[in-house]
Length: 230
Image 1: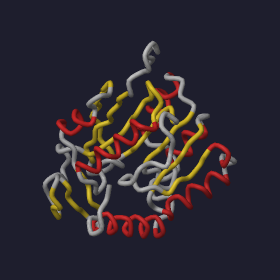
Image 2: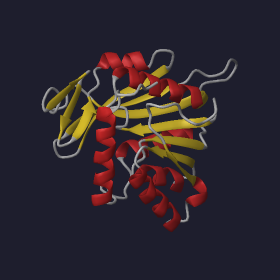
Image 3: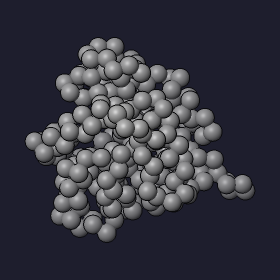
Image 4: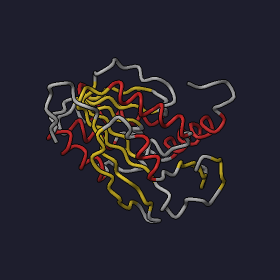
C-alpha cells in the first residue's frame, strides 16, 4: 500500500502521538466516549461477541468494551498508548478479554477474513490519511468483518471550525497544534459505504471548540439466507 518516501506526514504524526501519550498518560480520561457507549448497545443487539477497535489509543473505549463483555482486539500505531492500555487491562483483570495489536491502518490488518463481529473507530479515519488510504482501511475492515458485521466510526467533517484553517497538506487535511486531521465531506462518507448497508450518519459535537463530527453506522452484507438484525 505504501511506498518509500510517502510516509513523512504519517511518521511525524506517529512521533507526535508517542510524545503526547508519554507526556500525558490517560489524556482522554478513563470514561468511555459517547460513541463507544452507543456502539456497545448496537453491537450487543446485533449479537456481536468480538470487537476490533482501530485507533484504540490508551484504551478508554477498548476497556469499556471488555467490561461490557466483548472480546476486544485493540489496535493502534502508538506503542506508548498500547502500553498504557495493556497496563490498565491488567490492573482491571481484563487481560483475557483484551488483545493489543500494534498496527498502522495504512497496512493490511493481520487478521483472517470474516473473523470479527464488529469494528469501532473513534476519529481514527480522520487522522493524517489520504483519501486512498482511508478507502484501503475501510476495505480491510470489510474483509475482516463477518457477513452482517457492524462498523461504527466517527470523523470530523467539513462543518468543523478548523476545516480550511491551519497548515494545509492537501486532500482536505489541515494541521493544528501539531495534529493533522482529514476532514470528511458527505461524498466521502457515501463513497466509503459503497457495497455496505449504510444505516446512519449522525451529527454530534465533542469537546470545547466544539469539534463537529459524524457518527457513521454501516453493516457488511449478510450472507445469503442470513437475516439482517439491528
